Image (cartoon, rainbow, N blue to C red; front, side, top):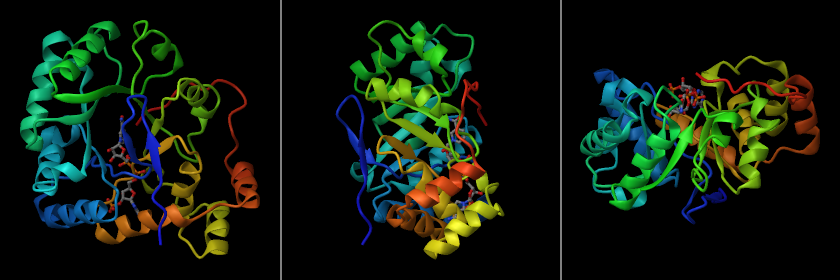
Length: 277
Ligand code: NAP
C-alpha cells in the first residue's frame, strides 16, 4: 500500500509530492492514446498534480491534458506556465486565457513564469496577481529563478513555488536555493527528476536499486522525494512507467544508500548557478 505523501504551498493548498510532467507529450498522433492512458492512470494513483506549459508542443501538451482530465477536473491540480516573451502586463493575461481554452477549464490552479526574460519581474508578478484576483488562476509561482532573481521579486510577493532542475546530477540548488525556499516555507518543484533518463547505467544507482529490488530510476525519484518539501514531476508516456514511478513512493532509502549516492553524486560545496533544460 503506497503512502500518500503531500506537500503544502504557502497559500495552504496541499498537493501530492509526486505529480506528472508533460513536456514532449501531445505532439505525436501515434502516441496520443498511450499518453492519455498514462496521465489517467497517474490520476487513478493519486498523482493528481499535472504540470504543463503553453510552450510544450506549442499548446499541444495543454490540449492533451485537457482531454485527459475531461470529466475529472476536480481531481486535478493543474500547473501551467507563461513564456517569458508573453509575460508582460497584457500578454500574461492573453496567454493564460489561451491556456485555459486549450485545457478546457476556467481555472489553472498554479500559473508559473516559465523562466526570466526581458520583462521586469514586477510587471509579470502584477499581471499574475491580477489573474489570481479574477479567479483565472488559483495562485502564481516561478520557474528557473535562482536566488538572486528571487531576491528581486517585489517586496511581499512570495511565489507559491520555484520549479527547478533538481536531481542526483543537478544538486546545485541544495547549496542556497533550497534553503532560500525552506526559510520561507515555499516548496520547490523538481523538474527532470530522472534527468530525462540519462541517469540510467550509473553503477552507484544500480547497486542501491538492486539492494531494494527496485529500478535505478525509482531510486533516483525516491532520492528527490526524500525531502518533505520538494515535489517531483516525472514525465511518463506509458502506463508502465507511471506505475513504476508511483511505486517509488514506497522506496525508503537508508542512511547507507544516501551515503553511497552522496559519494557518487557529491553535494555542492559552493554556489553553483542554477542550471536549466
Ligand atoms: P524526466 O521526467 O526526468 O524524464 C522523462 C523521461 O524518463 C522520458 O523519456 C520517460 O520516458 C522516461 N521515464 C519516465 N518514467 C520512467 C520509468 N519509470 N522507467 C523508464 N523511463 C522512464 O524529464 P522531463 O520531462 O524533462 O521533466 C519532467 C517534467 O518537468 C516535464 O515533462 C515538464 O512538465 C517539467 N519540466 C519543466 C521545465 C521548466 O523549465 N520549468 C523544464 C523541463 C521539464 P517515456 O516518456 O517513454 O515514459
